[in-house]
Image (cartoon, rainbow, N blue to C red; front, side, top):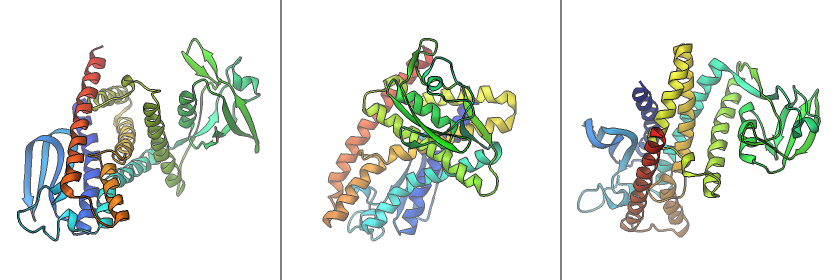
Length: 349
């Protein structure tokens, strides 16, 4: 069942991403040579109107291949007027950006489903730990967190991610009590029991039922939470504050999906579906963000070349750009092998 859930979740996320590329390419008159879900050997497929629609063996990626992109997939002779490079630069930019954009759209639709069924959580403190900075500063149960280090807080889960990533650094907290707002600066205290620095909140989160138009507001908060968490995690990786054990590939993700499914199943199919949708939401935002990074072979890397073209008024030769993306693709595959190896070692450990 873990494999089935993994294929369904990853398949939906990849399908949304590649369909974004496909749809905007069609709108802009760009010929799509192949629309593929999965990687590796072809399982099934068909050909229609000049496009091969394919499902491949490994459910860990996909492709929307444009005619002439990187100097590939084009007929001999004169370039076709429907090739990727023949399209105006802003048409190509929109076709590339559409993939990550559709991942964010999918995340928002999943958030609407989650909020519609289970509501959301306001950032209200439920308890205060004695002997920790929050108690010493006079904070009490029932206080609603408004900002942490200047960042607006909308959901209770944001309290956790902010305090966890903050470590031992001073933290400025703005909160509301009985309509009045207060600001305190807390210096986290190390807890031997928890093995990390704490400011002393003992539980937080007040259930809120989203009705009417409020469902869109809280759905936005859900997507924002996943987006901010992803960006902060990436920043930690770049700054060397995270290790290889904090990164997971397909195997690690499948393990998490399996654990969540196992814990959710006893509570019924609705709870199972909602928890799997929550994972899919986070993964879809992750894929959207990662693909926008300005790295070769990713959508963000392609955007860099097209933005340079828009500024200088002429494109970089497709063959040269293709070489850069090919080198990036090779590096990406090496990284994927390393991450998968790390996942396997961690799984058996």
